Structures are given as C-alpha cells and as structure tokens.
Length: 367
Picture 1: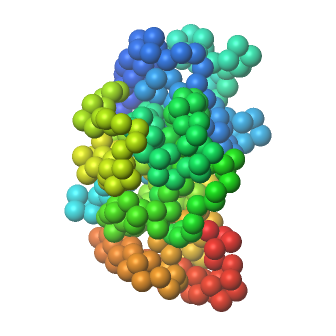
Picture 2: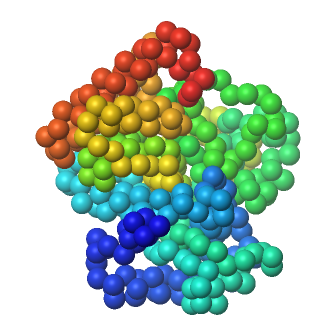
Picture 3: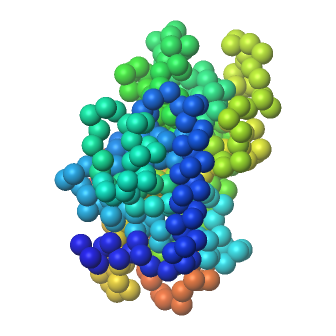
C-alpha cells in the first residue's frame, strides 16, 4: 500500500511543520468546545466508512473490508481541494470543500486521547480521515422542507420528526438531473441526505442555472486539474463556514404561515449565502488516461454518479436549457485548463450515451 499512502506525504499542502500545527490547532479547538455535543454522534454511513461528528470536525472511520477505499477517498480529497484552490479565479467554482486535516491511525495517541471518549464504548481505534464538518441546515429550513414536501402523516408528528437526531443532520442533495413527483409513502421521507429534484427547485424558484454552472466548473476542475474522473462525488447544500450556530435573521411567527412564505425561506438563505454547495465523497474517484479509454471512463463516471448534473437528453424545455448551460460552462472552464480535445469528446460521449439510454428507456432507471 506504499503507493497509496504516499499521497498523504506529498508537499502540496505546505511543509510538514505547518501541516502538523494546523492539525493540532483544529483538534484542540474542537475538543475544547465538546461541551456543546451530547455524546457520540453518527452523522453518516457509506461504503467505505462511518462518519462521526466531533463538533466542527468529522472522522470518517474505515469499514475494515473497505480500508483501501478510505485511502483513496483521502488522497482524492486532497487532490480535489488543491485543484479548486489553484484553479484560475474566473473559473473557480462557487462551492465549498471540507478541509482535509489528517489521516488518523489506530496508534495516534494524541488523537485518541482527546477524542476517544466521544465514540461509543465498544468503539475500537481505527484508521480514519479527519476533516472539517459540513453542518446540517438550520432548524427553520428543515421545518420549511417538512411543511413543503412531507406527507401528511409526517406533518402530523412534525415536532417529534424534527427532534429526531437523524433529521437534524440535514444536507440537501441537488438533483438537477431528476424530474419526478415525490412519493406519498411516509417511510421514504427523511431529512438526512434529502433529495431535492429539479422540478422542486423550480417550484421554490431557486437559481438552477447558477448551480448548473458551479457543478460544470467543478467537474472540469476535477477532470483537468485534479486529473480524477469524479465518479461518485456528491453536491449537497449545507451551512456555509461563516454561519453562526443560531440563525436569527428569519423567525417563523406562526406554524400556520402560508405556503409562499415557507417556500421563500430556502431561497432567502441561498441568497444570503448562509447555505451553499459542498462537494463530498471521493472514495470512488479514479485517475484516467488521456485516451479513448479515458473518455469512456469519464462518461461512465458521469452516469454512475447520482443525478446531480442536468440531464443531457431530457425533452423538457427547462432541462434542455439547463444542459446547454452546464455544457457551455464545462467546455469554457476546460479550455482554460487543458489544450486537449478530451473535454469535447467527453461531452459528445455523454450525449451519445444519453440518447442510447433514452431509446432503451433506461436513463431514468440509472438516474
């Protein structure tokens, strides 16, 4: 595993002394504020690890059988973070990436002595990736989501539903590529990893074109600066870094406020930039070659990911416009990063594959 671990030791993040100091400073600051967190808090679980909140930090602790994916996630996280920071200013995407802090080992005495007591009693020290935390959306935004989209059975128990720890860790997945009605089945409704579809964004009058450009610029930077295929990355809405713990700008005077006021809440918070797009999850990303095989790899990664990107073959007029916006932004950003013909070939491959899937009726099944 030496070739994988070497990515943690490169010089892209500055000299070793500075990196070590930043890590100690972040750990100490978060540990000192632990009085605000009531015991262990699991905020996510995926293929390669379980995510534990440590106030303003998170540790993605590896699943033993997926430890290689954790190494890959950490290495690609650093690639992506550095690539966005180094992108030309005019093409730098308007997104946030959690700051990579450290690779934690079971033998890391400093970390486990400070944080070990904040895991379940039967938890054993393991490998993990420490990074800054993406905090869930403010309470009034979560309440607005329930008022707007929850089935009646959930609305009837709204107070208890919102009080659930899982529903307090609310990040919104931005599905620009999916247009569908929401199921009325209550068991399928939850706020953690809430899936907001493009037709719902339109209902809320959110600026989908700005998000399409940001995703396109991000994908171009990941391809041509980080040199990774972006397979499996996620684009979610969460609190932006400067947001205070308590939001006081908007107060719902009544739980019976009209629908128009409720729908304005999410749009208003996006406008105030108290919530913004975050880029997460790099464990499935791979490097690629500049070759026909590389084009096929990028096209497969586009469709293997969840439907964050606009649909390239939808016949809905809004989707067609959104795809044109995405395509133009991707090609413009790519042209500033590479002289290769691969960006154009990638877009052509995505459109051709979309047409094939559309003819077979398989596009919606994949997305």
